[in-house]
Length: 119
Image (cartoon, rainbow, N blue to C red; front, side, top):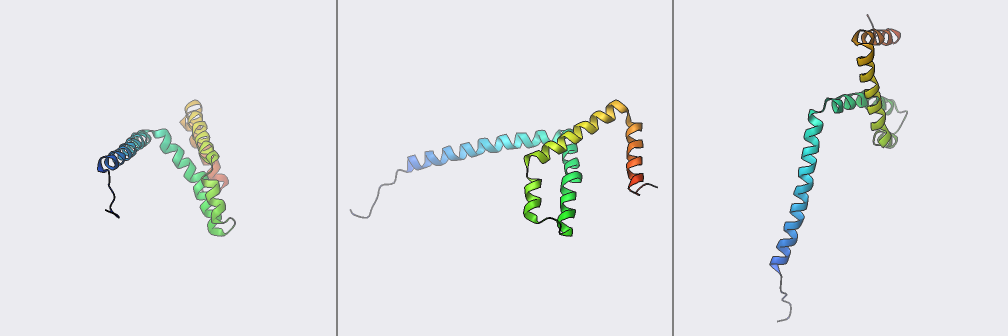
């Protein structure tokens, strides 16, 4: 019979099964990684510092029209931006541990005073 073809359902099923198992394995890995990030306070501090130093600054520059959206995305997605935020977070944490909390509070009062944001 011309026009009919034989379909190997078992082979098709096993290929689909393999693909789904690989995808489930990748999802399991991503879920375990995200769970670790969710409970890691250093990740939260780094994200906050990144938002303050990089994202908010780029948003302000973009909204004023100094840079375009392509430049903003290039800077934000660059691998050095994460390293920069992580380094600032690490240095800030070490500074607060070594110098003491009172010194950190005085430092930020001076910074906010220079910017005119202090009482």
